[in-house]
Image (cartoon, rainbow, N blue to C red; front, top):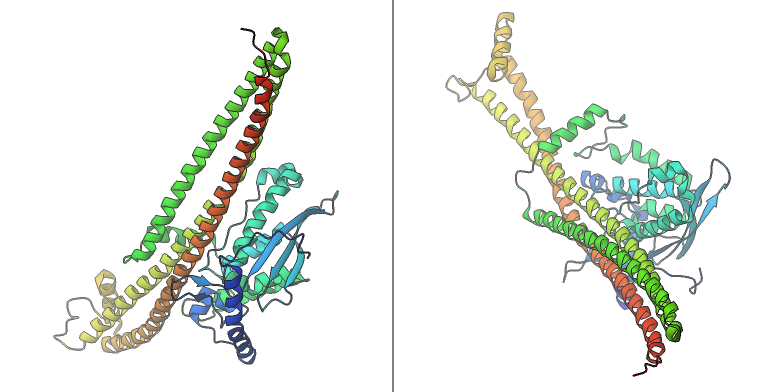
Length: 502
């Protein structure tokens, strides 16, 4: 990879001196961590399974947080560039487009500091889907849609579509590679480095299907599971739609409100930009009509035909400049605004998942309370004056428990023995639920902590992207007006040379 050819746009939000200092200060820690990891693997807990930390190259090493400002710090940099697209198997039914990827990094877990490979769009899809599954607490950048109509009509092989996709994939990889957690994932390293990527894909899918993805909230692996049925999915969706967190955390409510306002602001910007494009197009048409009118006038004024023709030519050129610049800059701006809105939607999904973790904890706590209450009620039945009398029999309260008690009485079942056996079973269930509540609480707290860090990372990335986006748009506008100023300045001497007889 030649330095003259590199045009990396990824950033680390820190200057070069800070990056070098961070790398130097962390090198000793990384070496000691790697040596420790080689001797013994960290124990996998329920929290690790939920957060996906077992999928990191070095599970002992996590993104550091600056104590002064609470800002995440990076272990190093990983800069990427999506280069030329190439049509593979052109002219056959198996034709597809592959995209060149070049990367440069100082992260220790990569085998090389400079990397070059090629991947097709399906590989990017696999990377994104599995990163989102392996790291549910991370805001994984979305991929561009597949544009179904263009897939059906074959337009996906046109140069305009391919150029747009290269830009979208560049933005996706930038977001992933500058994320302090995702840049250290095993899958991303294989995506960039592996020469047997299809084998890595199969291995990762197999391990995910039979391993940590089947763990429950208690951290217990239940073995392979079959695919979830449509009825199960719908029931979960309906239940989650009506369930709400009883004690919402104000910090995360503020995050949601901030995201809503940001999305509303971006939508407003998009509407204004669209209206501005229409007006600029109409103005360019007016300039073209003005040029035609001035050119027609030049035929009538034989003495000033040349200056008038130059004015008409300048008007046509200005119309061309405004139409071209407005179309190009507006398309790029709107495309990037859509990408930022999709990124914001991914962040909102992570916030919803955090609420679900808290909701799981609250529901488990309620279930534990109901089981403890039932066990205490049964225990009070041992005394003739216990509080459980008048509140149901051994089989429970309500008409169902009453009928079951009557059936047991007619069958000659020993009620005291039944009561003791139910209490023993409830004691075992209480112990299981207490462990599950403890793990669920730990998961909820850990997930909330990670989401709080992700919120900082997201806003840092979003602020940087907005700065670059608006800066690029402003530069385009400045360049357009500068061209216009030069164009009209060159015309002024021609107009001033016209002699008017008084």
